[in-house]
Image 1 (cartoon, rainbow, N blue to C red):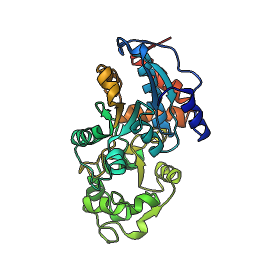
Image 2: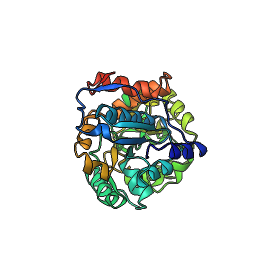
Image 3: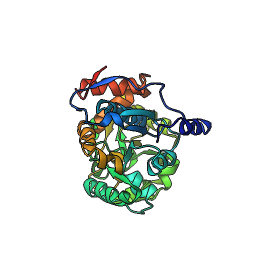
Image 4: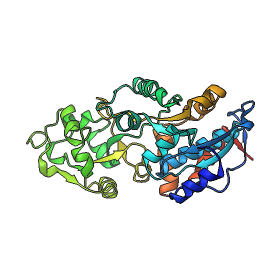
Length: 320
């Protein structure tokens, strides 16, 4: 987003305003300064859920360490408004998920199962929108099923294939959200992909599927009231409840790898920029993101503080 006061005023009138009154002063470390960056104003955007805000704050700090004059417009309500800021040129930097772009913004019906191919396809198609996708992180915020530690030990569970081969029918109790229960990449297609017929005496009897809200699913899975709970792979409640995420060995669920996204003209003007963000991306993983989300959602820490401390600990930046 241009840094002009008129634009900020207009966004404020729509309920949007800079997420913080000031961008923290930080100094370069592994993320080195880019020559001439101080002459360019850039705006960073993000959606308004915990993980996106943390990634957005990392983007703010990365751009600041690289030397840019940064405006923080993270914490924008909704995926589409944040996306539109990038497409319209109102923001120049953000983080997005490959699966979200491919399935939601670009309207494709089927995701590509290979993470690298999915990223490349999104990168190629989004070039027409004036956007340049940086290298993806290993963070894959997709659907999964999780079990508690006791269940994992009892049956020796590691993968989703183990549901069919190691767990007796009477113990195949699933807790899922209403939306997941009816999605084309949700419950029924998942069971079909793993050879577990729904409504069958040798698969998953209908009575074994409970539809719950998200919070109840995590609680029921943690307590063992539900054997398999539908989760999001980077959710901070996974470490909070010490859950075990089962590996999607058949690669059924779409890839939602978090990747930095830039205004293409900005990259042409400063071709070193994606390299600076790659320093961040290559240090991120599902486990790392769960820990960072946990610090915000469970421990109540500020997303900006969590992002900054992690980047300092990784020697990406130094405190100003």
